[in-house]
Image (tube, rainbow, N blue to C red; front, side):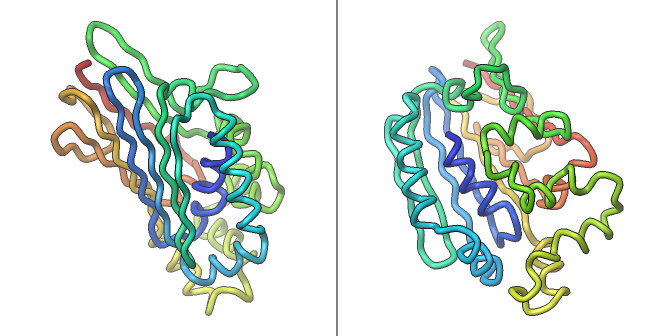
Length: 231
């Protein structure tokens, strides 16, 4: 799971035109997870100068193969588009932190025939995400996250976060525009009727969450999303 999240966050989180994810769960907690993102060209160039994508994809494949919860997987890289799909037999095992500590990012609980999946991002649990995604501890990348935005206004943060892309973006205005246009859109498909949800848009047995990138990067307030469904 580490390396897949690495591609999603460390690569696609910053200045991507679109990031779309899809999680499908069955009644046993097994299912499929797919992510697809298209980078704006200037960030794609920055990213490939910074990271050897062939090595990253090879490490991701090895990570998939080493994770006993993953039963099948595939990856795709085409120009500025990156994506992947995996199947798993235990969502809780898939999202577990390797150091054995209890994580608070993705919590799935069942009671009285109702299962609730809660996803929470805060400044306090960002370190948990760094355990799942070691690249987020890199000083350059960490500067763009919640710790780097501490005490800054949103305008000051925007100026800081686009600095590494000077020489890649056509202009500062284009970099800011790309940041403002970047969202994470994530759909959760459930095996039973949804009884309640928070933060998303409900359609049938599916809920879609749309999170502005800058809110994810600054985390100046808690981001919490949940969905409850009948088992």
